[in-house]
Image (cartoon, rainbow, N blue to C red; front, side, top):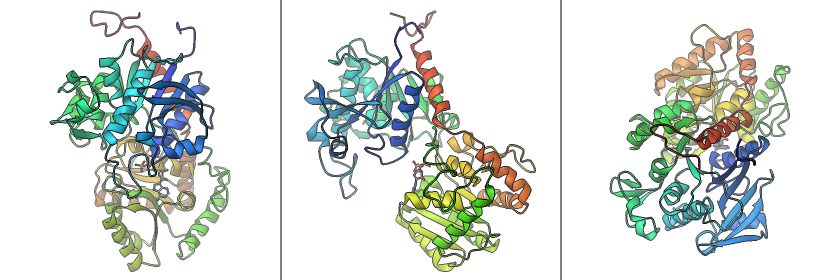
Length: 491
Ligand code: ADP
C-alpha cells in the first residue's frame, strides 16, 4: 500500500442493521463494514437520519452542514462510524424508510434519495467539509444510484465509486422531470447516463457512472446480463461486464449457530446430530402436526412473492403428503399465495401446517427442526436461508440460480462426497419434485444422509471471506493503471 494509511471506504446505504432494516441489505451494510474493519480497512457508513434512527442513536454531534442538512456522527454497535444525513424535511417522519405506515411509497422518494445521493457524492470529494475523505464511495442499491453520477459530473477530485446490486428487480425509475428537480447536471440525462426508456433511472445512474459494479453472487452477475434476469438493463450490464463481479454475502454466524441458538428447542452440532431430532419433535408440536420422528419434514421460510417460487411448492404439496411427508411453511406477502397455503392447511391438517406472518423465532425453529429446506426461487441474487439451513444440517432443495447455485454443492445422481443440498435446473414443479425425490432417496438411508448433513454443517459462510474479496476489489480499483487505454492515472 502506497497510501501510508488504511484504505478508506464510505458506504452509502438507505438501511443499516440494527437501526433501520427492511431486508437483507441492512444486514450487509452492517456486517460487511465490521468485517472489513477487522481486515484493517477504514470503513464508514453514510445513512439517512430517519426518525427511528435518531431515536435509536440519541444525540449525535454535528460534524458539518451540507446542502442544508446536518451531518451527524454516530457509531454502530460494532464500533463502525456512521455519518447521519439529518435532513428533517425528508427523513424525520413516522413510517418506514421507503413507505408510510399504510405501505404506500413516500410521494417524495425521488427527492429524498436524490438528495441523499448528492450528499454522499459530496462527502466523497474534495468539496467535502469533513477531514475524513474516502478513497472509494461504495453505494448499495438504487436509492444511492445517483451518487456516482453526481460524483463524476459535479465534484472536484472525486473518489472512485462502486455500485452494488442487491436485487436488480428494484431500480428506482421516475419521471424525467426529476432530472432538474434533483439538480442533476442536464448531460446526465442521456442513453449513456441515467435515461431509461424516457424516464430517470437511479440504478442505471450507478451502473453507468460507477467505476466498478458488483452484485451478490457470481452466478447472478452472469444471469443479469441475460434477458431473463436483466430487467431491461442487460445490455448495459453486458457492456460493462469487465467491471462487474459477483461476491457472495456472508451470514451472521453468531445468531445462526445451532450450537448456541437460544431460539431453538435443543442445541446441537456436527458431533451431536442426534439432538436435532428434539428440534424436529418440538417443531411438529409447535405446528400441531403428528410427532412422527421418521416422517420427513420439509420447511419453508420465505416472502410470498413470485420471485420465491412458492407457487411451485403449492403445486407439489399433494405429492409430498402422499410420500408421506410433512410440510411446514412460514411467510407472508402475496394474498393469493397466502390463500393457497391456507387452503392446503385446511385440506391436509395432518401433514401441512403454516404460520402466515413474520417471526424470527419460528424461522430458527424451522431451520433446526425440518429435515430439508425448500427454496425454489425463480431468481435469487444471493439468498440467506439456504446458508442458514446448511449450517443447521437441514439440506436445502433449491433452484440452481444466483447465490443458490453458488453456495449449495450438489454432485448429482448417486454421489454425495461433498454434497450439501439438491439443485434443480428449471424453475418448474416437476423439476422441484425430481430434486425432492432424489433427496428422499438419500434420506431413507441414515448413513449417507448424515454425511450430507455434516457436509452442509461444515461449510463456512462467515463474513471474512466476502470481506477479503471486497478488500481485494478496492485495492485493485485503486491500483494505478497505465497503458494505451489507461483508464486512470496515478495522480
Ligand atoms: P429476501 O431478502 O429476498 O427476502 P433472503 O433469503 O436473502 O431473501 O433473506 C430473507 C431473510 O428474511 C432471511 O433471514 C429469512 O429467514 C427472513 N425471513 C423471510 N420471511 C420471514 C418470515 N416470515 N419470518 C421470519 N423470517 C423471515
